[in-house]
Image (tube, rainbow, N blue to C red; front, side, top):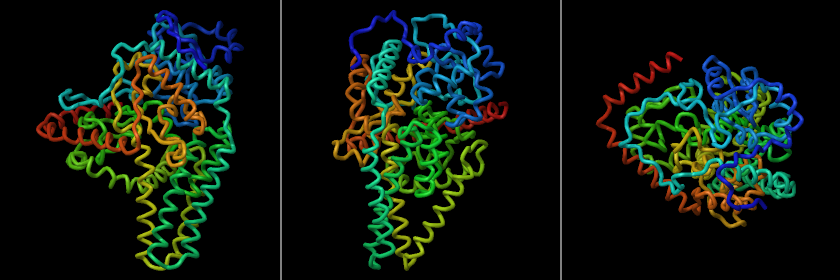
Length: 519
């Protein structure tokens, strides 16, 4: 187990790739040196440069081919993305693909300090916030118990040691027997839903129970598709992706390609108001009063206006939260088709359109066995409304967490993930219900770790947090809901405080539009 002995503040963070990249040492020595000022200058001239394990990688020719979507790379331009890169990719990519794009050796001004961003003051159209800030009077933040003076270098070093320990001790090896049990659950739910519709007596109870079984089937399949999207099953991107399409697209009608683009961006810029699509839900929800400023979404490439409709819905969002969650699945259908038909880069577009098309064919055929419009409406309402449980589980982990970094230039990957994420306490016998989402802190620190191993890793993560003064936030499922509703209510209460500033907000919005048009 990794040691928790105090580390000297003067020792620089260790490299997680040191052993793996030893063969590139000769090539590294031949590369020219690049300093932070040179890095900034080259980025301002249009180069997409990312620092990975002291390599400066130029990714202009790769960004549009990136399997995880272009924004996962764009948000890391000008950053030391070593930990993000290691956490999201298999070792084979670290050993072979990454050195291929190296164009320089990065030499920071100080080897001792933890600097993760060299471009915080640069106006980058694809990553940096472009919204005007009104003031801080109506911008509360969730309570945070982190120590004020965190040693990010020490946190980074211990996080890398823990990541190395997990690899060396087989935590990343998937236990396929765990998924055998999962597969039996999927089959039972599918057989129950289909059997009730095809063979059950014609009654409201039949279609109500079929709707419940369908909703839980979709929930459980979403957990599995999530694992496949992170390559947790086999570690082979192509196989896991195609299997994920067969699961999510064919059986659920949702695009795994859209999810992967969205979700990878979320992991890179978790709870960033301008960049994380998982918290961008205007006009219906706002998890931060910063949305009152009409922000520009780098993911959706549009201004999220805080207009009259947004003011109304956000002012009552704590009361409408569960109602909105009941309609969330319909939004995912729309986002899936929008991605497949309009996205510039959808590597499995044909396969996904075919599988989602097949879903609507077989699902429509199944629905044709429901004899009346009333029973059909009952089944559709129940199956899609109970799917709200999944969306509550997803949003619970982040909605009431911090959306502003205390030190964007220095806050390391591990500290950022702990700050923006919460865990849900549940007994082991109930792990199936949460599907790994109850261990969101551990998952965000180690995204490729099989979810059945997350419970074993949680004590190690808690030790790391205690050692460095990081608040490890966890609640029961009920208390987590209460905490989230209270925070949504706090944000809602601030709408009235900002209502008298429409003229100022309109000016800020006009200025933002001009800024966007110039890009």
